[in-house]
Length: 83
Length: 221
Image 1 (cartoon, chains in turn yellow, red):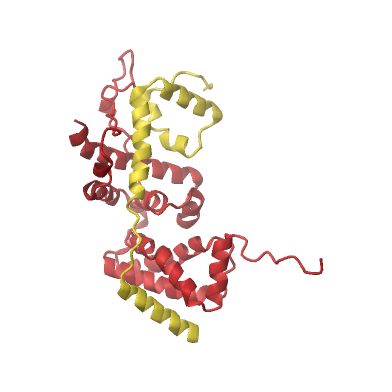
Image 2 (tube, one colour):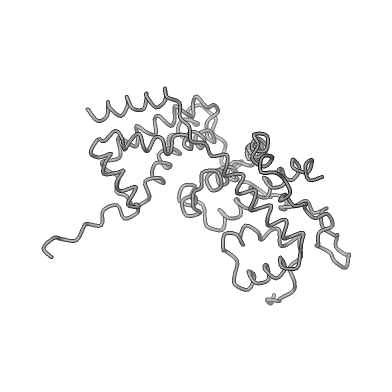
């Protein structure tokens, strides 16, 4: 099969989004991806939704630890440090 | 210059991690508590991917911290401190899961053939002059208030979608998009190739997006 510059179909583009965001597309495919996006509202929205999905998934991160668990770990540390 | 150049200790560490390792080796409890505050919640979430309950996961994490303390004097810093801690965690969690017979047979860990990122019915069918173009394009979310997007309910939709993923996809998206690990860190931790990691991440993200789209459709109607 030879490399051809046929336009990417929307159905194909949605499978390339992660590679695009990860910078893993070849320069040629990257350019075709961006050409498609420039003229396609559906795919522009899709790409924005994938970016938004990543952002919102990041909000699941939480940074609390219970005082009890913290105290228990401190005890364990002190035991180790004096051992 | 009479001073010898600094030995290339801990080549994989950032200055910040080097500071923490040196302080831990000096038995500095503030450094330990700093690490705890930084990683505890994330470690518990990752441990829960392997073991059944939060209680067991917290146990696994406590054991992990003991492993960190026991190993710190021998830690060579070839990987980042964070990667090293997670490796101790996953080893501890796997051992515990096996003991509790919760281990998943390896064959079923393969994520198998997965469907496409988007339901094929949303595109024009073959034979149509514009085959493969959107028939039912997504509706933008930019009109939605931030309060809706960041609501507890939206977050629980994401959480539930992640929970339903095949195990490896779940691990990859949790580490990458929830915990913010780099692709290189995830590859090292889960022993995945670059391509494989990306494919798993793609499938996971696509499914989470689809779940969000279904949920938010009520608001974008």
